[in-house]
Length: 276
Image (tube, rainbow, N blue to C red):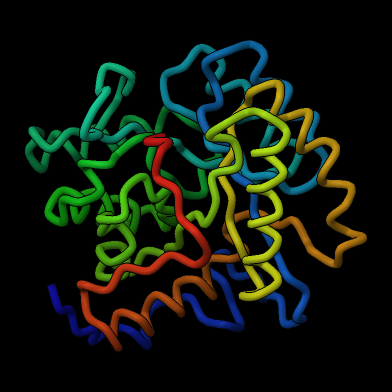
């Protein structure tokens, strides 16, 4: 699909101002965002609030601790996202309540999005939970992105499939967008966690930004507690994911105009094993 952007210059994000009206960073300090997914199911998920710094918390709708953790995260000045379940190619029994499915019509899809966003307070944007099938469907994605555009929310593609069209459709609807570069904890052993963390740092140092997704596993929380202290000494800033989206959106727009809709590229080495 080849899309011409007649509204490219009118979209509200640029290098100088982001969609929250804040000045975007001008320094060359590498920046990373780390999103903690799947929050809200377990009482132990409150441990994410003990992590120091600007982690971004992606909270599932309708879970037992959804509203309480979202409120506490907001009060601690951390960014809250909705971790919205979307249909996958397999294991859809794990989706949970409120999932977007390709069998839904337009009104059902839009209402499901509105309901989920109402359930999670202080949401700035969303990313997909699972979604390896839904994120390949441009028509259904269009309904989703239109709802986000109306609410001035962003979309972060978890990239659970290399065939995702989510960023492409987000651009068509003027929705700030980006994608994750690294899954930190598809495996929970120390060797793997270190390998993925080092990959995140390499991407950030090369491209000046990188996004990772982790989960509220005790092993992951303990690992990040130890690692975050190293970032400052490495000259890398941990920032909310929304801080990175003006630049990532600009890059995605340039690629769209240059290569058209068929171009899919992920910085660094991508892993898709975690349909999450």
